[in-house]
Length: 275
Image (tube, rainbow, N blue to C red; front, top):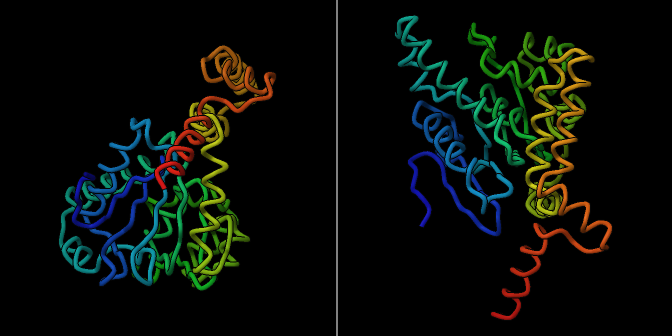
């Protein structure tokens, strides 16, 4: 029995955790409760070996409309210290999602506005429906896309962000894809099947190797070439002698599938027999 949340839905099936933003009546806008629950669920999932991939999407017509207006209205009268506490919780959530060692896929089923684009940016792979729209609309309210900026700049680069952050323009899915915010644009009705194809590729890869790839992508850009040279040599040396590395190389030379994919094949065989 999966844990019940107020603002999100969680379902685990076939080594995949499906997280759905569940406030469709207000376009899945987030408040302090949703921030807390997303932080909690990603913290819980990071050590669950039965979960290999995490998929995030929104219920209803929108993906996420950014901050809940009622929550924003309450924050408007907060002191600096109260605002800082709230903002630090938001930053913690984004970092928790970004830094998890498991691969994350974002299915953008509709509009992603303001902080909603941050949820897109912290995921490894983002797939958007053809009609999806994106906007860094904070400047229209006299605000800035502060907590999401580290992740959006990483994905899109400073040049694109100068345009997007300053204008607050509405972006089509195609423009967001060209900018690197998302990876693929597909019709809404094809999105789940498309994601399934990517998920199959991820599950056949070594789970520890994927986690280390995410580490490399996070750490190497901040290093000098000299630092990176030593660090990356140490990483590959450790991976070669690790249990997963040894199993992967032995499987390759033995012309068989590694054990982490055999579990999947055994499950398929069991399911077929049951049917």
